Length: 318
Image (cartoon, rainbow, N blue to C red; front, side):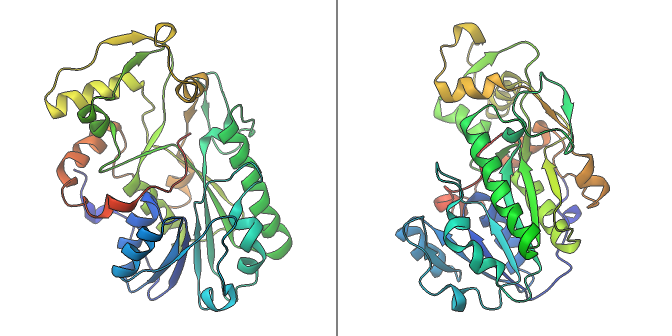
């Protein structure tokens, strides 16, 4: 496991963050921030999860497009930071539509982070791309995320919302990795020559977010990916080796007969550069490749079992 002391620590203390969509990433982020005196609050779509969060000292509200926060003025009072990770729907971003103006009106708001996806870049024929690449989504999820980015950007441009956009690669970590797919028997080793997936460990997402909070730059866009885009079948093979079970057979992509959602991932091929988070935010990745990341997952999975009990909401993989 990478040494935990390397992770970026919050320079700010005793702040207040509101997380729209208290999912996997927000759960890990809240653990780091609460240790520094931050007050944590947020939303979920599940009443049972709301009760779970409140039991653990997190103020929580049930939110969806048809159920807004009853008293946003009071709820957002004193909020200094906002994390946005509610998935967009066919109409756009529910948070923007219901509470966008409320968030833009928060006094002394220091930082807003929107968790998007690298799917906004569409297919790039396997080439390396950075944040200057055009956003040309070729999937429904990519198109919806780009629309949501544009919605929030309008508040940055017209109302001064301190917006930061984070385009995430496939998120993995304890309880949500190739190890879990292997153990459940759902893992498949599909080979498509020349194709690579990008991924990012949840703890590296957390340290990028905190680094951005420490050094805000409203209007900025950041790619989040590790250093080593890799074929999916290699990752599954490594996970099988870690768990100590025989790997599933290698299947050529044209014989896989995959579901439409799986096919959509394989139709897009790109390699994401992460130089900006290193050069501008000073981030040193804890897990620069899937090998170090999966080894860490094996070591900490028992410690995070309770945390993962309610962690269903998050930005989709790209």
